[in-house]
Length: 220
Length: 288
Image (cartoon, rainbow over all chains, first blue to last red; front, side, top):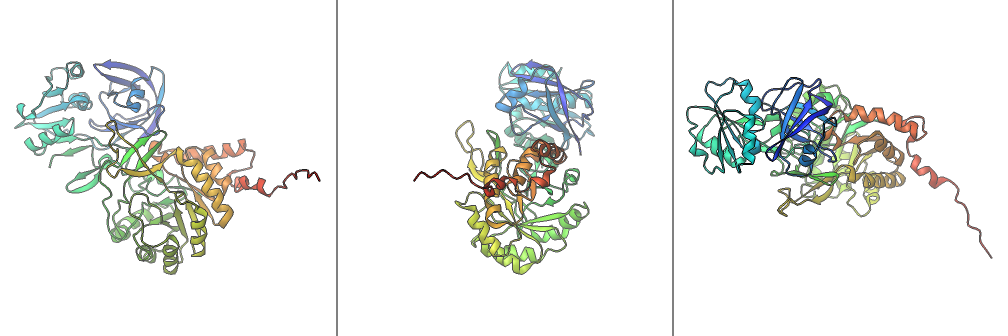
């Protein structure tokens, strides 16, 4: 069982419309790229699932998109404030790949900087809906950036070991082009450790818990 | 006082360390046939609470008995088996297939599936005939008078009550569409606590059956209040989602909460909320 600890905020840095929430790591393990943590959202009943974006020495950093009261509360945390952090949880990306290519869309780029480090900075293609959102591409130096993409098929994915995270339509499109791609999915999640059965998604024709079986799954 | 989990709020096989903090593990409800559960999305957060519409996802009776139960027994935690169905015979057949477990909890009140055709009392009576194991009836506070159902299941042979299940509710997303695919789900978390206290208080007074109190317990003080209203045991539900260490924490807090309430220990708080009723009333001076 992973640990749950109260950790202090080191900094909350704006990255375009997102925030990079940097926390003291304490005794927590950073885990594998693609794994996630449950972060207490001040004032809310349930924590929020966020994949690790970066693991600087002594820190855990998460890219947060303020889309609702919980993520807004996370983005508003000040240095020194403490929140409960539980993880790492779930299954991350497999790193035994020959020609890795990272594909990210919007806030879905969150796990890619940490993944890029582990894979020694492979090529990456990122899509964003606006120039302002695309400022987050700074977290992944050298990535090819497309603003307001409509067709994933514009990229040449064939022949690569694709590792992707982004909006569902993007993941479905990647899956179609690259059978065997590793895709990081998202679902509403109350607990993150298999207790609530809330994050059920269809896997191989059966409803399974994304937090236990995923969040990274091989494209069928 | 035993500290349990509320059914459906913990998977002991995935999180054995959490289950081992408890005095008993209550399984997810087992139905005769396997159930995938409802279509996603099936959870949504509300102000101070949450909705779930899982829909009794479970491996079904045969697979539960063959694969899950032997692995659960290895945990060394007393097992409570939550049993569900769609008619009295469904429940009774599962009860008949169980032995060597701590208790059976009959889920008579899931808000996320169609209601069983038979009444709570008919289901309990059928199960009573099928097993000698302790039978707890899990009831909802949605009934206009929960004590009426409590008395009926007591009469039908229930050994105890589990109070309360979730209450049906709906949440809308930003675009004013239902947040849950099934539209309505069961509301849980702190908003349930006053409802649970009222149900436990009333059913304790009207049946004297042992009660597992649950609904919105987040702290040791919450658990102590249920005990004071007449709960012998307490179950943790939604709090386990946010805090897997909640059982150990609540147990620590209980001792302190008892001290602050000036009772010797948590068990000494049992039923004390009722004591004032027995105290002599001050008579009003009658003026002739």
